[in-house]
Amino acid sequence: MEKDSTYSVFVADDDDDDRFLMKIAFDKCCPEAKIEFAVDGLDLLSALEQSPSHACLIILDLNMPRLNGFDSLKILRASKTYQSTPIIVFSTSSSERDIQKAQRMGANEYLVKPIDIISLCNMVNKLKVDWNLVDCQ
Image 1 (cartoon, rainbow, N blue to C red):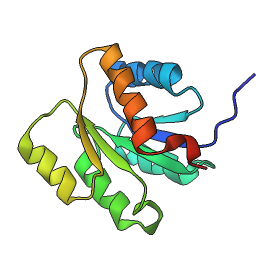
Image 2 (image 1 turned 60 degrees about the vertical axis):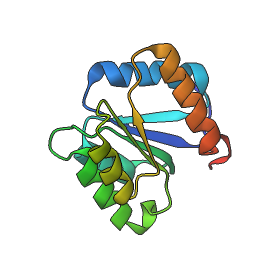
Image 3 (image 1 turned 90 degrees about the horizontal axis):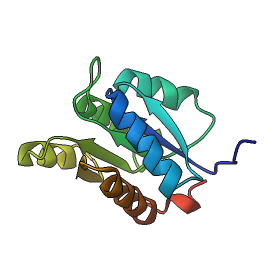
Image 4 (image 1 turned 135 degrees about the vertical axis):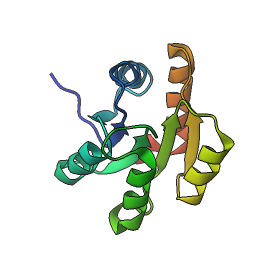
């Protein structure tokens, strides 16, 4: 029996392992979330358009093929539909230049990918609280 979801979290990341770990972390720490995965920005835009669920949080990797995180962020922020949707950049890069660029482009937060599942679960718990995901409908 499938659980009912009141919101969807969209994650765009081209790395299979990162998507797998993100799924584990959300299943453990935020099981009520419906997670929608995309392998790049173009896949994300298509998934957002086709989904019957509202995007309550969008998580973007920076380095993806076809349409990267910065380009995806630019397109999303130009759309009235996603101007107020929380968008988190989630990258291996800790470059201050990338962080500042993401913030200038409208990212709500920039997180460096953690190196272990416990840290990733802690991050998911923080996102759940910070962005009030439980109340998103």
